[in-house]
Amino acid sequence: QSVLTQPPSASGTPGQRVTISCSGSSSNIGSNTVNWYQQLPGTAPKLLIYSNDQRPSGVPDRFSGSKSGTSASLAISGLQSEDEADYYCAAWDDSLSGVVFGGGTKLTVL
Amino acid sequence: EVQLLESGGGLVQPGGSLRLSCAVSGFTVSSYAMSWVRQAPGKGLDWVSALSAGGGNTYYADSVKGRFTISRDNSKSTLYLQMNSLRAEDTAVYYCAKRAVGRSYYFDLWGQGTLVTVSS
Image (cartoon, rainbow over all chains, first blue to last red; front, side):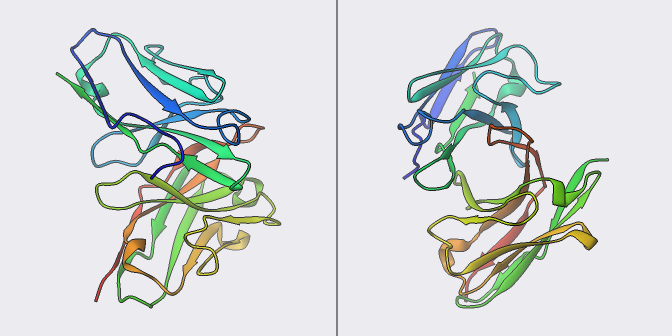
């Protein structure tokens, strides 16, 4: 049981916009920033969004993040086949004094 | 090139020990907080432990507290994870990750991972 809650799966067709939600509590998302990681099949995770809505250099602007209260969302617009991956939200948890992850969302491009 | 390279994984019996290493290149390991994150087969990411920049503070997930120890050898630019009293549920790919500088807690660099299998 993950501390942050994500839907286990999401899907869309090429060109569509999809969103992935991440729900937490006051000790994690409510008081710290949210980060998103993308894990392509068979590879290590890669930073996708940091500090709620910032994109690292090299990440296409099709990816965007937002946060409100104790929830956050990742949006992917103009969906492409190479976006098929697992997506994880994460945040520092003040009560646990550690990083907590969501259970991950497997994105399928139909 | 900025890179993290894990090693030391393998097959170990329940109750046994293993030490993982993470060789750092392209930056000074002592200047950054570092973490270990694991992923059980077919499962999600699970944070294990963190070491602050400078090494003064360590943090552990409850599931490994008292069994795992994170440390760093600055002269060798290497991060370690000493794992004792291993259990079947510790079976996972273990990644080392570098925390980015700043107030936000996120990992901007990950290694490729090393597989630990705990089985008799």
